[in-house]
Length: 77
Image 1: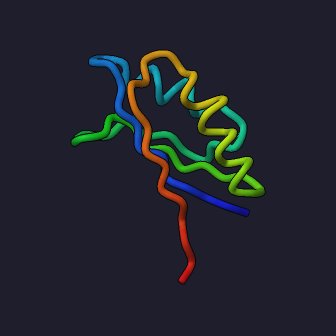
Image 2: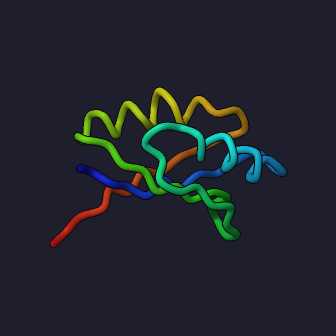
């Protein structure tokens, strides 16, 4: 299982709607509105890195109101 944090920037005033929509996507564990340089932080999981990439590109980045994402895979050292 691969997990990642996805940091999301949204259009002004869209953070809550984006977080709500993303929280319903399969593979998303949690989606929270935050303050700072990012507007939403998502924790997601997938079976493989490739599946995680597809989740981000094909599902999350397609949500209306998102302007930029940064995916940070979780590592276990």
